[in-house]
Length: 99
Image (cartoon, rainbow, N blue to C red; front, side, top):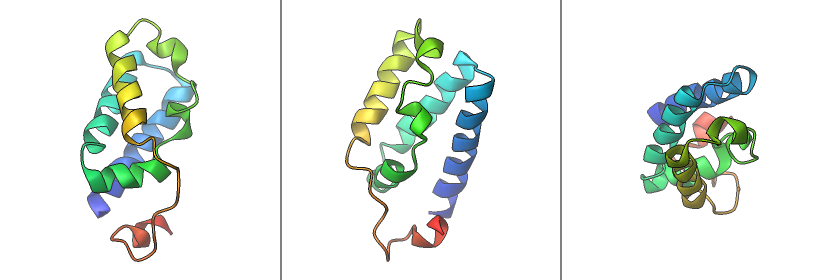
C-alpha cells in the first residue's frame, strides 16, 4: 500500500506539472503507468478516489488530439476506474495513507 501511494503521489504531481507545461510524450507514459496500476483490483479501487481530475475532465484533450493509442489507453483507464468515486472504506490497508 505504501509503495502504491508513493507512486500515485509522484504520478499525480507529474500530471499537475503537465497542466502547466504540457508534454504529450510524458503524458503518454503517465497514462500507461496508471493503466497498469488499474490492472490490480486493489489499486484500481484506490484509483477511483485518487486519480487526478485532470485526467477525467478533458484538460489534456489538445495534448492527445493526434495520439489515438494514448486516447485509447486513457479511455480504458477511465473505464477501469469508472466506478463511483467514493473514499476507501475505513479499516483497509490504505486508510493510514489517506490522512
